Amino acid sequence: LSSFDAIARELRAVDRTISRAVDADEEALSSIAEHLVGSGGKRVRPALVLLTYLAANGRKIRSVVPAAAAVEVLHTATLIHDDISDKAEMRRGRRSAHVSFGVARSLIAADYMMTAAFGLVGQYGIEAIRTVNMACMDMAIGEIQDLRHTADADTTEEQYFEIIDRKTGALMEAGVKMGAMLAGAPRRHIDKFAAYGRSVGVAFQVVDDTLDVSSKAAKLGKPVGKDIREGKVTLPVIFALGALKGKERKELRDIVGALHGTPRPGQVKRALALVRKTGAEKHCRAVATTYTARAKAALKGVPSTDSLRALKGFADELVERKV
Ligand code: IPE
Ligand code: IPE
Ligand code: MG
Ligand code: MG
Ligand code: MG
Image (cartoon, rainbow, N blue to C red; front, side, top):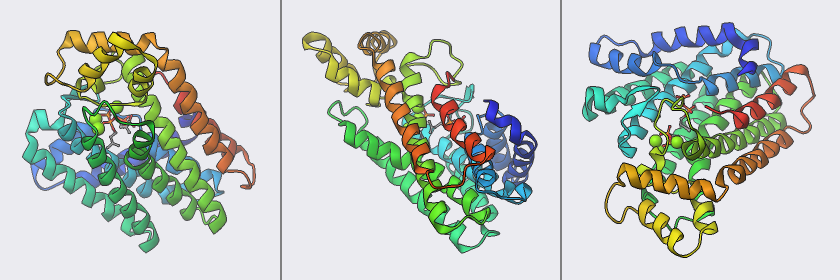
């Protein structure tokens, strides 16, 4: 992503801060953390923190590196939890933590990372802590709602958006909000940045869910069709269920509704074919674009600078992504 060029040095500093923050005297904890941190990840959230700080006219970018690192550490911890919830076996091109290290150790490591993240945020004071802590609670609620709707073929679009707003929008909002706060932006601008972050998060999740059905290469670091296998009723599936008729609709409902347990590979393939033939990818990409348009519109009234334009451009890059 070309937006990363402007903040390449800081992103390297973020990675160093992350490694230090998740280091532990206990080998089991540090190796689980390093297993994830060291296997890549797009670093979208720390980039958002840094780019927002610049867009809000912040002058000491080094000072936000710990905040950017904290958001990535939190995100990484939630991925460990998420893979346990979703029974997902691959993450960032490797075996998921719970597969390699066991569920119990992975849960403790994720909690350790959450706490480490709050350790980093603490230096910025109570408002930053509250911002991040509310996002964490929102994410937990979103993930529980996600579980509740697993294999629920009647999940509505409204329910879907409520879930992704919480599980993904909340943390992006918090990161962006911290970036703006730490830059010393006025209150009315902080709220605009926060709204930008939330909508970008929703758009990002819609694209993630779309790539699950549309991506051809296994560049994702997670298998294509994994959401269908997990019984996730995502936007492309909801759209397809609305577009298909008769027998085909029932077929897709039965597969995602997991009437017969986890779908077999052949059923996942069939479901993918059914979803694709409805043009769900095109529809969902367009939906994602409406959310980035909303994100950019939220910034109206913030003085336009090159950095603000870069932040808006970043939203576009995120929905155009293929991985
Ligand atoms: C995965 O997030 C979970 C979602 C919110 C879709 P990312 O796609 O940002 O995962 P990494 O950090 O790049 O691995
Ligand atoms: C995002 O949901 C998870 C969190 C926000 C914690 P997904 O379940 O779609 O993420 P992936 O696809 O496993 O990366
Ligand atoms: Mg998952
Ligand atoms: Mg999930
Ligand atoms: Mg996904």
